[in-house]
Image (cartoon, rainbow over all chains, first blue to last red; front, side):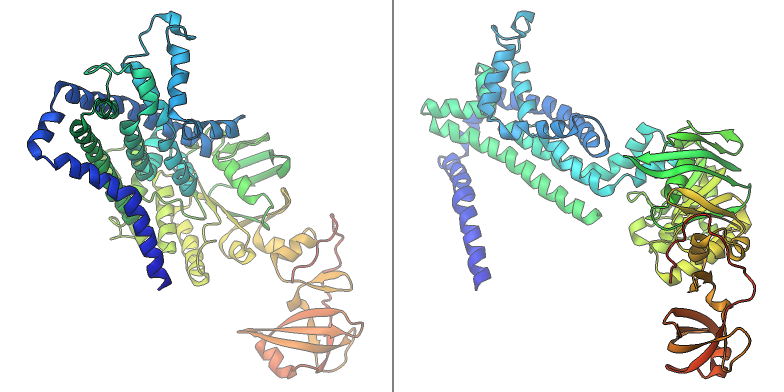
Length: 260
Length: 327
């Protein structure tokens, strides 16, 4: 009985807080038929926002994946001064509010900022959005890969070394296959975070429709302009991408359990 | 031929190896024997190039190797916990070193088949390590190490994670394998029985130092000090002197040089019988007899026997403070 109650409470909690709001978005989106939804997600602004979001994720996530794997190896295998500080810094993006990240980028790259004199167009353009996205999605890969590396230990790598493999060969043939599911899982999480980022991006993007407006910004703009149907449609599009990554993650997670 | 000259290795102030020198003759099977923390595994890892010594030098196959990284030493290394490549089949595991060396595919295939045959894993080539038993995994690891035709084969407690009966089988098997392939082999173990059974050469280590090196029988019969004596086989203490329990003679009547003792416990160990005795002074002594001897004496708890210490084996002067006798 107690277990049933617990289960009911847990499900109700999830339902009220997660499922209902997301469900309502879909309900409102399709309330007036598919035609209007199709129209509002195929406007030039919506298309531009969609592709910009994809482009930013496509740049930020691979960079973070490479960095994340290197960081995880350094954290687990390396011995260097300042390792604990590095470990703590890696979690900074979890701790700092995205709006603060956006403002910080503005201070560094803005016209009056430290690097403002370099004449690089970072703020209010793609590089700024990418920088903000990299910042907020930085720790995911490292945090997923590090425990896997720790668990597999370094004996396989040592065995590879005694068999004649150099550092790169050992990484390619032994380490990478061993951490691949952790890596994939981290990439999926980082992607979800990159696509959904709002706060930091909203500060640095300038929100130029069709140019520097990501999907989340589009949702916000339509909502502010009382275009509720349009906002719902764009939200639904975001939710679909997010759900797709979530499903991918679940499937991959299952495969990870099956292979270990 | 492996030569280790005056190697010292410290870990954060802990001295794992203290001025250690050993010679491993070509084609021999040498066991590094010692209690845990004696530095035997560290010594093996220094030979393999997995640890860098703080001082001293290492020669492998007549070649100076102190600063050679592990990947260039041509050593086969077998780990206690197998270090199998979990995502590779048995075939790919064994082929790893040859694939790294970019050998032709058909040559690799032939070599792997040959090795799997040798270690008794023919027909297992498409399995994954997770589908093998511990003993099979370790034999796969051996085949993988042998595939590169190493100049020396280094085994770090290779049977330490296996069940007792599998261990015994694999020991005998390793001995036969060594007779077949003749590769210079160094085995690390804390099990003196394993070392005595497998090795043609022993190096006994304690606290990062070599206590004694030589043929197993020489070390057993002429241990250089009480620690080696106690580590290499069972001992009993008699008036502060260490003796082998099977060197003690028990009689059911008084005799020259014999003293009275009371049987406290009789333990049957299959062919042998261990007799725990109390001497008149209250000192405890353990003697080991064959079953026939024990039956003739009709030993049971509380019976009185006459105990005679061995005539041979004059008391040794330990060159280091005597260690607590192992029982």
